[in-house]
Image (cartoon, rainbow, N blue to C red; front, side, top):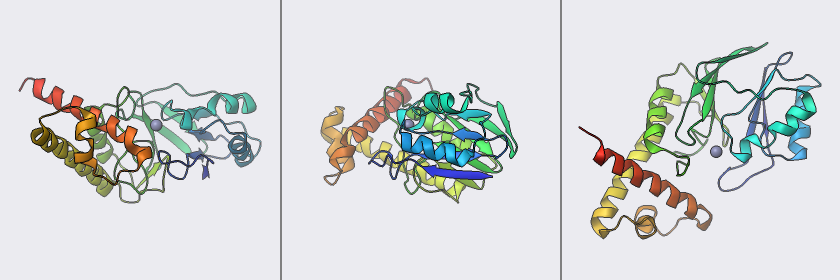
Length: 237
Ligand SMILES: [Zn+2]
């Protein structure tokens, strides 16, 4: 009743590629159709077996998740779903409920189905962190999202990148701990250097072994932490 198709778009930011999920058979939905790559679109169509999906669901609008939505809609006649938090989509395999999960992007959604959570980029399988960086990323919102996911009735988290997470509570705790550790490292680096310029504290936080391809993401993540700290300081207590 659930199929996973791995798109051919591996990279440091997408791990082994984007995972597209299909839930249902007679009235299926497609979650995150992925990049606009004809090979992947062909694979989705084959997996659907000539059935038009009741909807194409998107966790968020980033191109590695959403660029295939318009061509898949054109190929199959399926609508691109535009609902929000709490809305349900009905398949022959039961309903999926949208869960607002902002942080990676402001409008990020996850989809709850059958004690499983299609989590988009809230988690990266096999990792303990995901990208939260400006202009779209918001660390305070992301930490609230981790709290919300921690309270959901789920046994499995299915990220859009990396393998399934079979210990949701432990994963939420790990992601939360990782982020708080980074926040503490940034506070310490600011104290030690007297600077709040991301480029100047990047090495102190991430160390000399940071992969060059991940440097922009690390700097973005630092900026999100600096914004978070600034807002925390200014917030009334
Ligand atoms: Zn994304």
